[in-house]
Image 1 (cartoon, helix red, strand yellow):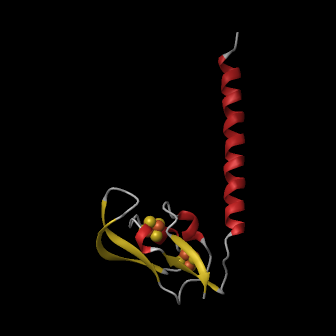
Image 2 (cartoon, helix red, strand yellow):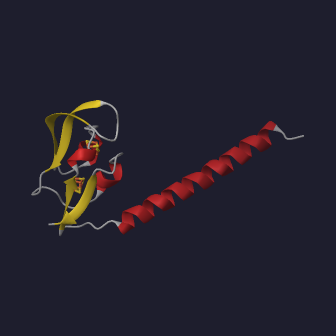
Image 3 (cartoon, helix red, strand yellow):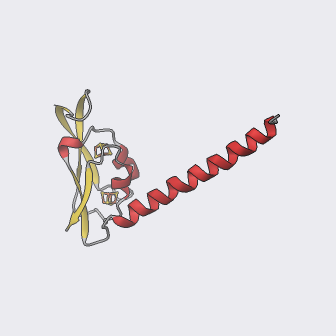
Length: 110
Ligand code: SF4
Ligand code: SF4
């Protein structure tokens, strides 16, 4: 009969395996994005739901939210904010791209 301790050990091993796979996928995604000082982030306004995640991760204060009383076509909720990138302070670090839950941010050539 399986002991509780065995189940807990299996669970921990599975957690570790899943964490490793997720971290690998994230590292791969990050490596595949272009970035750096020759690039700048760009918000695809129609996909932005104004969730504010990008402004939280941006260390360079390069993103601001502005009023936009529109519904998002990808989620059936009313949103009244959109994000926009300020070109000059953006350092091309890509953090906002990875943080955005709706894939609304892309990196473009400066
Ligand atoms: S790429 Fe980096 S610096 Fe530029 S807006 Fe995104 S988080 Fe900010
Ligand atoms: S994280 Fe994405 S969806 Fe959220 S405010 Fe920023 S651009 Fe918009």
